[in-house]
Length: 385
Length: 142
Image 1 (cartoon, rainbow over the protein chains, first blue to last red):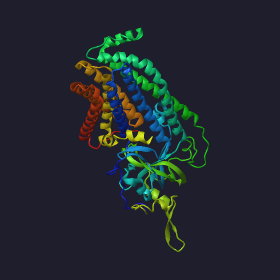
Image 2 (cartoon, chains in turn blue, green):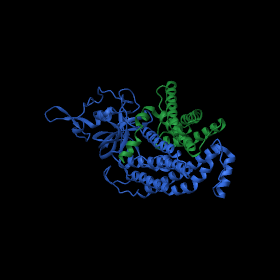
Image 3 (cartoon, chains in turn yellow, red):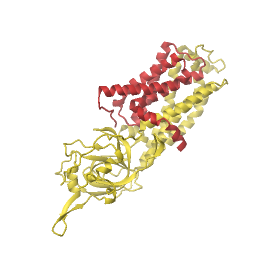
Image 4 (spheres, rainbow over the protein chains, first blue to last red):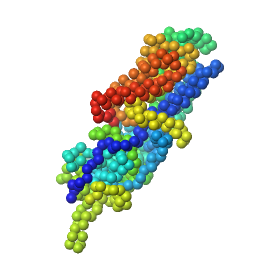
């Protein structure tokens, strides 16, 4: 009954193409470089005093804008169920479709797990997540839209498809938003310093790269003349090094502000109302996992969308995920005598679909998976029992 | 907002086809080329001797590598171990070629275009070589 003639579709699907973060960032940087490159080329044709300083300010503006844009992109992604992403056809809203699946909780991951997300970059923290090994009835949902599929590492015939389910965590959204706001504020505060102090200083250094080095700091103050002379002594490479170091300090200040603001927002929004259900709209922190644990039979319902994710076996794939779970029902616990490393759909099917007397002397299959037929009837359902 | 996203997504069809290595090369090339171009705009008659060009390429390699590592490890959630060395090599080749091609063509003001093209092509080539050596191996992520 449990073992059905339904091959798993693990790994990469043919023809799947969803934009990943790196693709979008590279596209954004290329677009900004093009716009600023054209502007810079036009500006450089002007022969007016102050143009050199303006061009250097442009360099800092560009770097700051890229950083701020990255942080706001993270914030929008963390706080929006259907974010707009860059695709081949221009910006498109990733619209999730409502589905329900059932299975066993295989892994759990709390928000702000790991050094990077907890300490270095709180704006990249993940929402609370459970990985559910799905009963075969729902494999079509795992694979829908020609998605790649994560599977367990098990013997042939027991390999199971699993799905990642994210629960919206308010403090993840607040941390990302606070980071973006702080980065923007610090960027704006640093701007006058760059304009009046940093750029004029660098404007003295860069001419050391010219074929004919002008008299350094002929019209500048004494302090700039001294600094300019030092740089001139080091030559053009010293000028490049100084520009690079100052750019990195500028970026580090913006990111430090973003990190600190993210910590504060995460810490101050972690007041946790105890909840009797696994999910509620205003849940503010990670009290999910005392309620849901590995080995729980569960049904989850919410918006499913495709996103690039990574696991230890398949690395980065474009898989269908719940973003976010809107309701969840605990259906019981997997008995201790069932193999659990990893679980398999074979036993999960037996636990969720039970043959019971139909009252007329026969047997009927009773569905205990907690999902209505409306979620699977629209699918071909090659794996339905 | 949508107009801004539309502008930023102009290169998505290209970056999607470039893959991870090509995207890394494109980012490194755009940044290093942009700094060289900025120097050219600011200093009329910019000229690098071979020694200065090499030094500049090394400094730009370090800068672009730090930026690329931030993007890969923090924003895109790749593990440091899986991307550190390949991206360093990618950034080094990209910065070196961007600097010297700009110098040979005497087109420092357009180093940002040269950087993007060179970086994208180097990345593509590196990924192709890597996939030939280790068929089926994909970079690890968190």
